Image 1 (tube, one colour):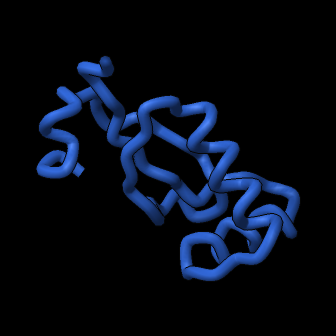
Image 2 (cartoon, rainbow, N blue to C red):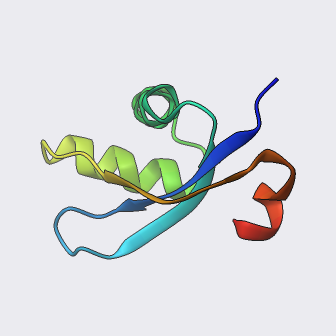
Image 3 (tube, one colour):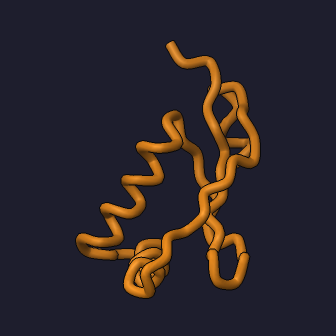
Length: 77
């Protein structure tokens, strides 16, 4: 059973602007999921933004904000 999870942000590598904040149990897997979803059919603002970056040959930067107790991730996100 997991006791901790991560709160992370996705940063635009061109503007250094934070564009998304999320939660992930496995950071590498979650990052790859963002990229895969954006390449397929971007259906939301976040995925359209990521697709635009990928089209320019760059990827968003994922940065951990904090590691939190699993039971408290919603309040921390």
